[in-house]
Length: 83
Image (cartoon, rainbow, N blue to C red; front, side, top):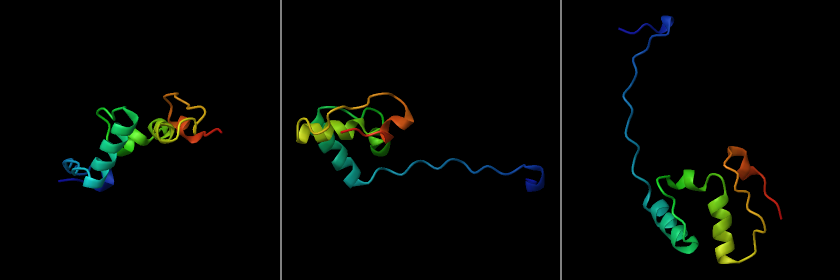
């Protein structure tokens, strides 16, 4: 038996992640076709997280729209946008 007072708890088994929504899969496929870049093993959200792929998508749609893409592999990199 578990004793919460002692910090001992029964751990629930990890549930498998549900399959992605069809709309996410369709959007991911379209982004990969337009940019020529693959999400690789990343899921939809993780692949767009740092903003690099989104900037490349914008430049593929309208060349030169994003003048400089910050490609630093840091979590904060996606937060700085420059014109």
